[in-house]
Length: 328
Image: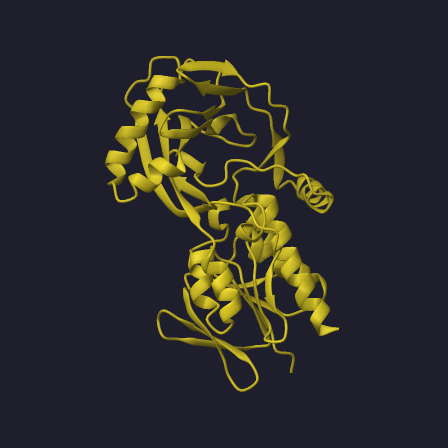
């Protein structure tokens, strides 16, 4: 009997590791507390269409990831996004000279993780509370008290604060994860019946509660009847207002948006807010993955590298590589 490998977390890092292990002929089982895949790459379905509330786009710099993105493009999961970009600072809007190539999932960000889910067994809506070792194998306990296993090895691909608890069987790894600070982000979406009279499709904001503004329909493959916008608050503002009601967050950020967009902003016909408690790591690390190969316990995620989508994917690859290396 071959004992499968468990992966906790079906975001980019977990699915990257799963893909690499499956390519090596390994039996993999995924667990995720959400109703669907994607983690911070997830898209929210709403009456205004699918909205990317988390990662807005991603870039590719590492050769391995560039090749991977090329493959996703061939599959039709991603396309290049060429927005009219602006900077806003000291009350002034100016076109951004930024020439960076930006990629988005089509028809929404979650198309990538959806594609990666093919041929992978996932238990959705299953929150793992504990990872413990039996006599020979690993077992997982979920918050409903159900046990899953046996597993030969476990990869934990969730944000650092959640990984800390699940790494209890490997105190050194748990301590490393506990030292990673993750920052929150309040995200809101606004929909307008009438198209706002601005050429802006994306904007990097300074000196405001806002950090980023994007016109969702400017992304390829989006089919929307409203002019929808996604706004991200700064980590600092989000931290200070972490317990604010969603209505109050929408009101506050709508005011800042109206101030910077440079045209009349009517009352939106649609709005929603989402709080990302662990939006991004406060700093970058060079771990790639945290590993105790003898125990068979690994952790990966964007927080093990750069905090970017690319970092999450590379971290998942590294976890799988280290695991396979130890099997040889």
